Amino acid sequence: MLDVIDCIKQRRSIRSFLPAAVPRTLIEKVLQAAVYAPSAGNWQPWHFVVVENSGQRRALAKAAADQDFIAEAPVVIVVCAEPARGEQTYGDRARELYCLQDTAAAIQNLLLAAHASELGTCWVGDFDEGAIAKLLQIGEPYRPVAVIPLGYPGETPNARWRRPLSEVVEYRE
Image (cartoon, rainbow, N blue to C red; front, side, top):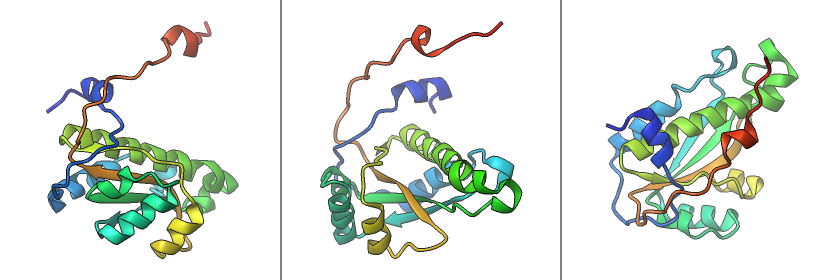
């Protein structure tokens, strides 16, 4: 098992997948990690649609700016937010911000758990939200916020450049 810092540093966006099926136990392992993400007020505004059907995966790829690698993955997880969840506690801030922050934390957990399980993923945000909602019959109260292809990596990308801390951190003393 990887140390968490090593896992964070070694994870890569995978855009090529082997055709091997992903066992349901592994899919559930990464989803379980996702639901352990922190959330405002513990409202947990996430919902996951797991797509294994090849025709639907192809349609998802088309709705995601024709990114064909999405269809190549044996599993695609569409991560949704439930904007109204937590609204009674936090009002509009829950709908406009917290549901997205919380769902993003769940996605990061999912990506890291997948990498630690020797699976590949890619966080895809370029997609037609309405087309995906229609395709998968996702309606209120959910909103698709990410498309995550999941499978065994067919590539090993090199590390990408990261901005140094000196450019992104300010200390206030």
